[in-house]
Image (cartoon, rainbow over all chains, first blue to last red; front, side, top):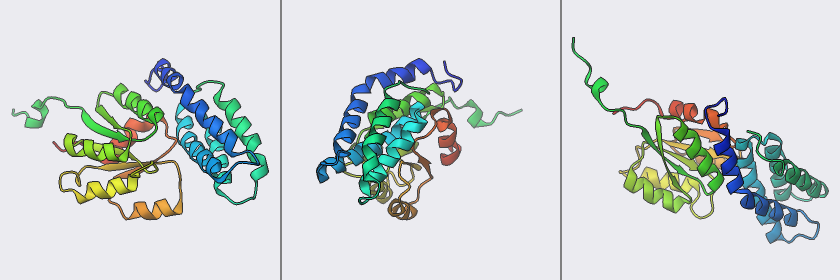
Length: 102
Length: 137
């Protein structure tokens, strides 16, 4: 049981059940942040980043939220800062693959 | 000495409808609120499903995601407000984006409050209770 009264094991189980969904969103972000990504791929990646930005912080991934927000903003913006998006995507994947921290 | 009638009424958890296209969020919110004795949770994965459930179940409150595919949370809120059956249900909006266009659309709605995503699960029950106020029945 966590200090919040919410069983940590139950939270871990939810995260584990949705691991494939999280991986699929990370894959969409990888595809959409490549230099040769199409508009559709970028739009899908921005949607995936938005979903992760609104979700992963609830499971304790504070840095994951910030990275996902930066990626979403970068994808929705014009060309400024596009070159750093693949690196941000790599950092986000590394953060989320380490497991829940809540 | 008389006992107020409400003191004799059986305890009834408040029913909350959670409308969010993210199954991670739906499950996490259900876990957080179910851990607290004061809530019973019903979920919907889309605005369309949320509207239907709100009309049939008449929950005590609705937690409604703003950005969803199909009917987004703001359209759902407008339709709930337009229906005599559901217009009195307190609405709490969940939003991950602090976008000016959303703020402007939200400002035109009679919502009980807004909870920013990501939120702390441990604080959610208290936040929700504070926003929708005490039970009147």
